[in-house]
Image (cartoon, rainbow, N blue to C red; front, side, top):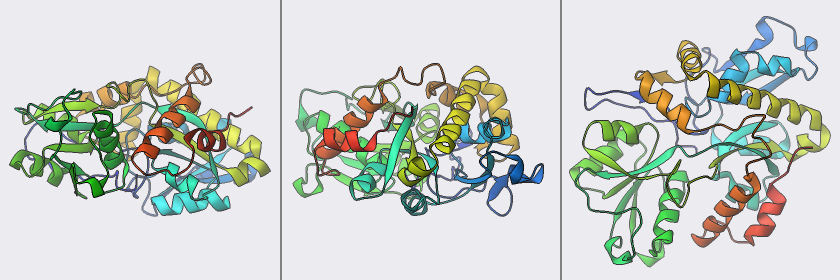
Length: 352
């Protein structure tokens, strides 16, 4: 997830949205110090849980619930003096382990860290997918094929080998009977730190498939140069599964369970509010410089497609089942080593 933040350069005069996925590289949202805090209007002592640092400033759109929980006062309602900060993937996971970071949003790239001993729990689901596999508009590739030979030899662009887009592409390949293991040599993965360069490689024929974060796939499609092969928010094998979750520090859960519940309640309130007020949510995000949105209709379509979990739906969606699914798939492609069920039982915690 640490490569989610992308800098979008318009190569066509169509539309642009500079967004990212569910947390990772520091963005430039908030003030010049890289943090936003409500303590300017009230002392931390006025809040039940005092000041809490939440690493959330990464420029992502799908991370909107934390921005909205801060801006609309949902954190404050729960007794939290929220301080939004920027932090990379390594800082987040180490902070979760030692309790300096109580709570973050993130995708299944955290799973391997959990297996390696980072002490954290998944406490809730967040939203459906924010990654697409796109191909050139004249490509004959199919999302589902009964003939794996049509996919062997593909060159697939990703943000980094081992990262979340790589894992998504790997799951798709394995589901179609093609080994994603690099030692097998059935496909080649090529990393592009800049999503625009990845798309240029696609257009030039240097790669056959671009596994890419929102909104670049949508921008590519709007340009007429590409089409969506797989949208993990709605296409199999990812349809109906949350790809992004809320993680909490096990240390903080054990020592301050009410604090974790308050943080989770705040973002659930924010998610319901976003679902009901997507236009106003985008206005707040733009005004607060949390994420650059130049095409509001595109951004609205994306933020609506995420279908954030709400206080009413929390507990009704099978979040643990989604964790198990991705654990099983990551085991298949070699990114988890142990038993997926045991891993899931250890990682997932239903808040009481």
